[in-house]
Length: 136
Image 1 (spheres, rainbow, N blue to C red):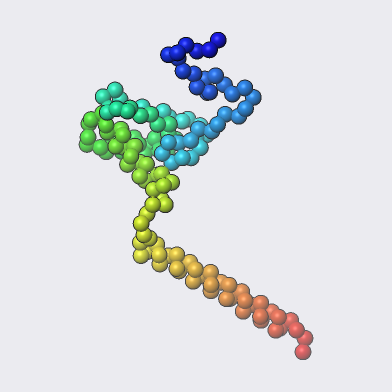
Image 2 (image 1 turned 135 degrees about the vertical axis):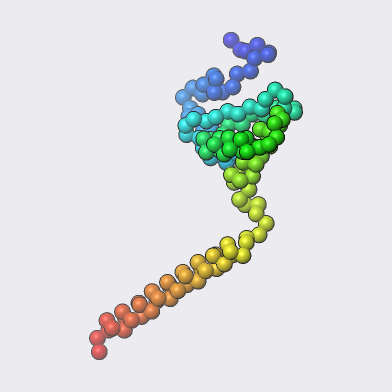
């Protein structure tokens, strides 16, 4: 029997008959949530449209810290806290950094230099092995 007009059933409620369930992803960090997903809904007084997030335990802990730290006591503080956590943990937040700092740039160049030295030492070692292995 199909649902009435005012009832909406999702695939999770109906079931997927022999198919694997689509994995649940965190709304903030986009990682797959293997266990204990937490659903966070905005309170009734929040501005429309009220939103709902499914988040993983590490993001939920960071959200709790942000909520405790926030001096704002309005219904919109959850949305602000989710935005602050997403700014730190979202995969897009990492790729949108404008420029590397000088320290990060130096570390990257120094890593290239170390690899160059290691390869140079191995090449010299190979040359010495070949020279000493050839009989006179």
